Length: 565
Ligand SMILES: [Zn+2]
Image (cartoon, rainbow, N blue to C red):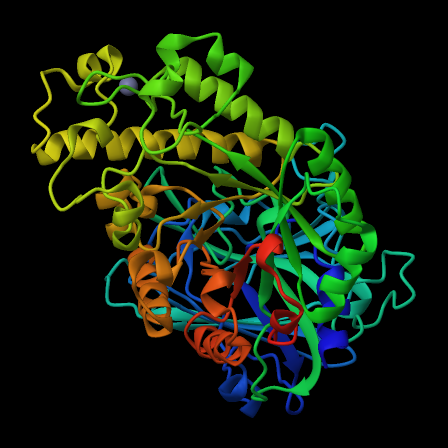
């Protein structure tokens, strides 16, 4: 079973941090009449809730379900709507001028050669084939292309164009022949459904016009940019041979933080990790080692995430050339001077407000994301120094951090004070909020830079946005991420395994599904008790099926590999 799941994951395209769906076989024939009354539609699971393009919440909902047989991919959508209105009656007219429903398929998860179907409440269809996203100068959008054998039906719960405002919604049913989805390729299964385990990238959208000129785009997989035409961010749809209604979780991401500078690493080490169930490496180290190990990861069928230090930049030559980039404490000490740094000499934190710092970090994110071996990037130290350390670490530094200690509270640099507009009062919630917003702006600038290079961006963060805000000025619920790796290192907090589950649940609620969460587990917490690690992983996946991450390769003992799902 594991070998099958891993083979499927190896096919996944770069944007793995996307919503997922297991596409199962229809339970019987489907009459395409828009009534959605077949047993298949009662049994098929709904897609996860829609979001706006940025990943934020939306008032527009949809119940979308999928199924397939040897001939067709089937789509059923129930779309609540207060007002039904449609005017477009010509095939291949610009359907999104009306309220509509849209389906996108990238059959081979290649980010090109993808299909689009739009349909309005009159049942008018616009189908097109795109050779590449619009941003690509080589993009050809073939509007004359038609889905051969397409069958669609729409039913209305209300009256079209009567303006009475008492409508309830509409339903769409689609039978889309595989001959049109895969038949354009040289793939061995061209014209047929892909084999079980294959992953397609798909997205679904509803466009609504609550007022003239006000166009709302609501999607299944947020692209975190102004367009849905970014197939690298679409959802992952994995074919299954099982009938609809079979319980079948999507294979979780099993991540491992890896120190790329470790000279003992070999390609065989990575192949062994993969055989044990690891799917994804988060690789740190020098740029050269990172690129080398990322290539080994690709060769081993693992996803490669580049691990990038954000606001803490020890020995960064650009930072060392700019004393004014550095963060300043309430005491007035700057992290530019090694002897004035808090806790440890490598705490060379930069000021989150400085525009040159942001530009420098965004350029770093863009450069790493542009590496062809890299599937995504992950920010670390996207925060200020610890104004409150995890409690179990207080004795290490001989500190009681139950009250604010001025040497550890940053950034009181002249630029931050000026931007805040008045002399900051350390106890003022507005001053804390200012710094939370500055840190979030850095995170978002770096994430946007990575996405501009076509790669998703995540971050290693403190366990929950609430704790992170209080401890390190990191309210990561404000970050526009593609995934988060909260460091749920229980021993740092003098806590046990149950605490990890509780924090994962709290983080999930705080983010509200805007991006997946992959809780980070601290392997030394499980020395001598690999069974506890196995049990915790199983419990965690019930709460948080997207996956988890292990810290780190240096602490990875052979018995832990046996605990992986
Ligand atoms: Zn500052």
